[in-house]
Length: 280
Image (cartoon, rainbow, N blue to C red; front, side, top):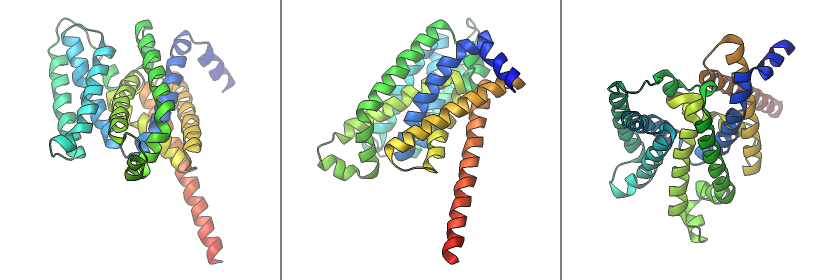
């Protein structure tokens, strides 16, 4: 085990990918708390799959993948925020419509792109081991932007999640903050694409806070636990990926699922023990 860790830490490929992976872990863990609080899990699925259309447009026009996909994902997220009020369509139905249509468009565009070689497996399932220097700069920029916004707006979002009426009555711009949250979900989705891909991004945005929710309830406690679980899962997943030559994104999400299962089992056991004590 010690030899494996030493090889992992001295591997040039792992050294190059470790910092971007940990940044993604911290950002997604932070956003995960708000995704769970606002019940936006399905939104992350819809936006992540819809972002394939943005990637397809970038491939077809020979444009940078991540910047174009970022603009498209944010636009889709904001459209979903507006759709229930403006178009009379429920949010889950709107997500399903945009999810299916955008992903179909992306597949068509990528499949017909003859001038550019596309790593479709990497786009769908992620591969942080192949992140380029330009992509690192874009990831660092997006990550910093999201973390600053989270720092400034997290308490307001927390209030809105549990009592939007009171939050609005107290003077909070609920509509603007809701749009901002959706836009940041779009940004975070693109941040996740290099690590977990389009298909598995939802796991990074749901599992850390889902694990934390079994242990705490305060905003600060949930955030700390979510970050801890996310970093642990990311490191474990990358080590598994290195040791067994598994896909990095799938390994990270699988590690987070293991952490959730352990947390759920411990929480269930603790509840069962309390119930038996009360009966006794």
